[in-house]
Image 1 (cartoon, rainbow, N blue to C red):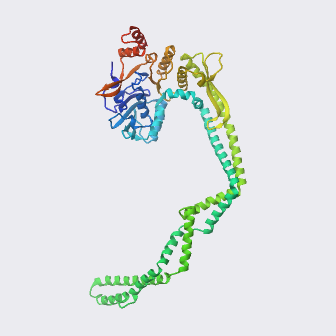
Image 2 (spheres, helix red, strand yellow; image 1 turned 135 degrees about the vertical axis):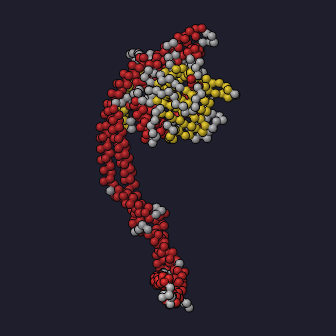
Image 3 (tube, rainbow, N blue to C red; image 1 turned 90 degrees about the vertical axis):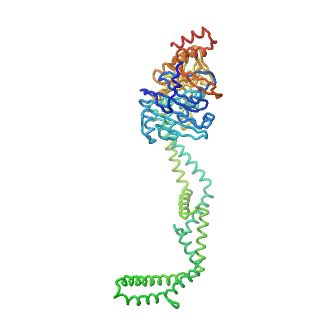
Length: 574
C-alpha cells in the first residue's frame, strides 16, 4: 500500500507542476472527522471508494468550502480551534484566462500555480485567501465555478424538474443564440417596466380626484410659506436677541459708560496716559513705540464706542417683531414635521408634489404616453422572442444529437433523447416552455423524464448531458455517486465513459461500483479509524495489491474468496 495521500508535508506546500488544469493537491486540517490529510489526485481518472459512512462526502464538503460554499462552525473538528483547507491548482487555456481576469479584478497579482485556502474557526468565522491575499467568499465562488464542476444526486432531481430544462438547453446556445437571449431579456425588462408604469397611472387615475386635492393642498401650503434656505437659522438668532434685549441693552450701555462716562472714563485715562508719555518722547526711543500703541488703543476705543452705540440703538425690546418671528419659526417647525426635517427637504418635497400634481392634472397625456411606450416595448418583445426561439430550436437539435451519441456509449443506444419546445406566455426566460423527453425504446412515444426514467437511466442521462455540454472551460469534473441505480453491464459502460472522459480532463468520482472503480488511474480508499479514543477519517491511495483487495470487497466477496479475487484482479488490470 502506498501512502502518497497521507504524506507528512507542511500545510501550504505546493504540488507538482502540471501543464493541464487540475487539482494538484488538497490539504485538509481539523475538518469534521479529518485531523490531517494531504491528497494528490492524479490528472486523469480518480475514484474514491469505501464503506457507507466512511466519510467520502467530507472530501466534497472540504472542496466545496474551498470554492465558496457557506462556512459553518460545525465543520470544525471537535476540540480544534479552526478547520483549514488549501488547494493548489494548475491552470491552462481559456480557464486560466477567465480565472486570471477574476483574480486581477479583485486586485490580486496573478501567480501560478493558483493557491486557494480557507479557514473556519470554532466560532464560525471564515477567512479566505487566494495566492496569499485575503478575498471575499464571492470571489471564491466566481473562481470555483471556473475550476471545478460537480455532478451529484441533487442534480438528478434538478434534471427531473422541468423548470430547469430551459437553462440547461440555453447552455447549448451558439454565440448568436446568446446574443438573441440578451436582446430578448432587454426587451422583456423594458416591457415589464412599461406595464408597471401604465398600471401605476391607471391606479392614479382612479384615485386622482381625491389625491389631486390633497397634493394641491400640500403644495400650496409649502409654496405659500415662501421658505428660504438658511432662514430658520437667521430667525433663531434674531429671536434669541429679542428674548434677551433687556440684558443685552444693559450690557452694551454699561460697557459704553465705562469707556466714556463715570468718574474715571477709559477715554480720559487714555488721554492722561498719552500726556504723561509725551514727556518721555525726546528722552527714550522706546517711548515712541509705546505712544503708537496708545494711539491705536484710542482708535480701537472709538470703534468700540461706535459699535456699542449702534447696538444700544438697535437692540431694543420689540414684542410685535418677536411674535412675528415666533409665528414664522412655528410655521417652519410644523412644515418640517409634515414634509421634512430641513427647509431643503421641505422644498424638495414641494418639487416632488409639483411633479405629481402635473401628472394628476395631465393624467390623460401621461397615460397616453405610457401606453404608447408599452406598445413599442411589446413590439420589440414580439420581434425578439422568435429569434430566441429559433436559436433554441437549433440548440435543441445539436443537444439531441450530442446526448444521443453519449447515450449510445452508455448502453442506451435504443433510447431517443428529445428536447420539446412549446410556445407560452412571455417571461424573463422567453416565450418557450422546454421539456426533456425520452423515448426509451423504438416506436414508443416520447414522455417526460420525470414519468419514465429510472434512477439508473437518470444517472446515465445526466452524465450524457454533462458530457454533451462540456465546452472545455472547466477541466476538473467531480461525480458524486453518479452511479446510483445502475449495475452490471450498465456500470461497465459508465466506467468506460468516465475513463474516456478522463483522457481530456481530470475526473474525480465517488463510487460504490467496482466496475467503475476498476477503470480508474488513481484509486483512493476512504475509511474510518479510532485513534486514541477518537474517530478519524483517513484516505489512502492504493497500490495494485490493495486495490485488488478493495475491488474484491466491493464485489461482495467473502474474505479469501477466490472467485471475487479473480474478478477483482481482472477489473484492476483494465
